[in-house]
Length: 149
Image (tube, rainbow, N blue to C red; front, side, top):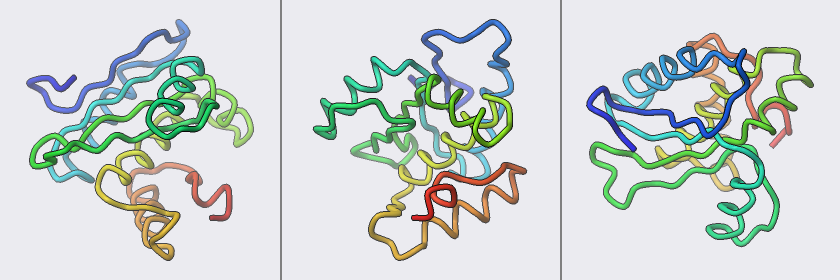
C-alpha cells in the first residue's frame, strides 16, 4: 500500500464532507516527523471490516477503532494501520471535534504501536510519547488519556 510519496491512506468509503486530503497530508507529516521517514499504510474503513480484522488477527469478535500491523522487516515500511470511520465519527462527537481530527489521533496512536510502544505493558511510556506528539501536532486528548490507561 505504500506509494512513491511514502505513507498512503486508502479510504473504503467516506462521507462527501470528509476532507481526505487533510488526513493524507497528516499521514505524510507523521511519516517524516514521528516515524523519521519510514512509511506506513493506513486503511480507513467501516466497522464490519474492522470486526473481521480484529477477529482474524487478535481473536476478538468486535469492531475496534484502530488496529496496527507491524511489518516483519520495519527498516523502511513500518507496517499497516486500519481505522474505523464509524468509531472515529462517534468518538469525535463525544469530544467535540471534527472526524478528520479523530482519524488523525487514531493514526498517531496506531503509528506509535508500529514504532514498538505498548500502553498495556510499558508503564506509561506510550502515554507520555503520545501526549508529547499530540502537543507538537496540535491534536486534542489522545486515546490513552481518554480511557485513563
